Length: 541
Image (cartoon, rainbow, N blue to C red):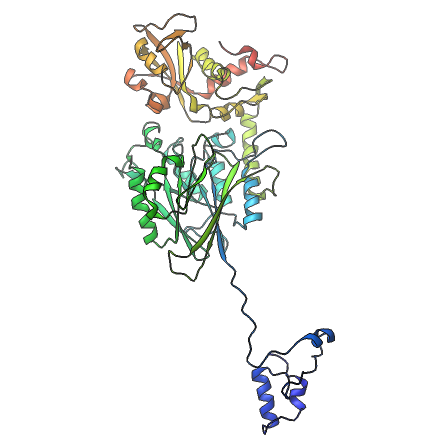
């Protein structure tokens, strides 16, 4: 209660009111004087100079209302982590890193670190951020792939991801491991275009098409799309019981359902390049999507289709999308959004303070990994670049020498990164070849082998092109269409991955019992390469 002004108690009222009436009026109305127009004395706790310049407000007057602050929620989107938990790049110019990214989110966006709750709410009250991803998280560097993706899942829980599209490599370590990782990560995988056709076989794979998340009263509907390759390229048994529907059909069902569930705004995250969705988006301005974020693009995409922001994100955490959505909570559901500003942000390894808990999860994984994979088994002075003939000679060539095959046929996408210059460890092998694959031997007629070698994804040792549809072996002899050749390949390709047909050509393959990393590691160790005699000087022909 305001103190009663000294003069209000002791001056004579200007009308016939009694002193008691004057006191009551002063208490209720906050009057500061009993004589109209006479300024009161300054209260004892007010500086004289301030009092001299102040004017008493007229009776009943109210201070002007402070303009309402606009309400803002920030959506943070990354590509698939691909197991890339630490900054990548040359010293001093590193980018990415999970702890570094989270540090920036917390400092710049007031992001709530820690796993989301079962109801989709952030782990701290009044959160104004929502973290999403486009899919493909577990395989990559040995730090993740050696542990079947579990460190990445734990880091994603700490980063507070709410949802991700299902990536086509999510099942690379099998369904059981996928479901385990999803539980560790504590976020939802979404796939509107993936349907379960046999619930008994595809147990646990009935993934939601969308989720609606509430942040500060704004309800954000998130629709996920998986890649068409999720079913066609998974190893045998892993996609059994699952089927795909067309993306337009899937979106036409999921978007209205998300709005019925209360979504004020709808965004799409997809394990595909968003240019694949552009014709569909152009046909459906009625969907009123705020954002479509995807990956798998050859070039960076940051554009608009009508009012929809369309963005591509790369693998790993070198960039993330920050979309700030301004809204008016007083407006009806579905009409609250007033503006959205989206921007791609580079994550410099030196930027911000890395999150300590995420850094500890990564450090603990490194500590467990180093004794297993830290042993040096070779040395490369210049390193070996992904996609070069030298990489083919090292990976496929060492396998061919180890298993004594006429040819080894792998797929280009199976080799996931460069071999960096310097010491070569078992960890280096797992980083270059992260997938869980066993090595097999098949018998193939020359005419059929030529068809497999012509596959644009073929990564081959033992044969080279010698004209259109023609090949020659390692000794320079033409491929004989009638001869039977022994070919080494991996489980993924044997069962039809990337369009190869080895299962049809030899239904009774020979299992080597080796993971595909094993012959590469053993061959590399046997070369005894050093800085003086680096590995590149002894690569197979």
